[in-house]
Amino acid sequence: VLAGYSGGGALAGNVAAEIGAGTWPGLDVRGVGLIADPCRSPLNSVNNGASGWGIAGPRGIGGQFPVWQLADPRDAIPNCPPNSPLRTFADQSAAFSLVDPGAWAVDLITRLAEGEWQPVNVDLLDAHSTMGQYLEAVDDVRGYLWHGDHTNYHVRWYPGTGRTYCEWLADRINEIKE
Image (cartoon, rainbow, N blue to C red; front, side):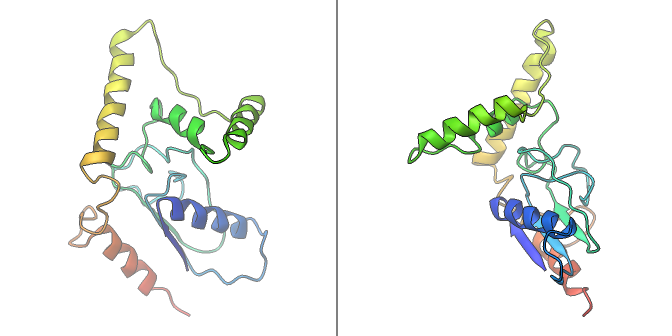
């Protein structure tokens, strides 16, 4: 079972996507459990009210194994709204480094040259809508920084159950048969 939370979820999910695509034949993967995956795809997800996808852009995971990508609807890291300005920030900071600013610059240039920016539609002629997008982004940052929207999966209830997100995922993993 591959499992991960947040950045570890991105890594485990990337490995699972490679395995599902046949890059690593012979590996016996029985399931993939990802909590707060910044690359969450709505296609693999247990939706439970989450309407967006990962702030870093969606990554699908194929394969013959179950994939559980859990996202609290209030957590903007795995459940970023489609037109959130935070997506631009995520793209710009993906390779951010004070140790190696040159690598960061190369990443930015490569993303620009290869069109790897997530599209964010902002209608500057519709001030009300644009302001709404930015106010939602501010609220998402507040949730991330001060309300535990990204860090409380061990205490927040998985919708419709008497279990936390972590307990619900542990139950799914414990159901896997050899």
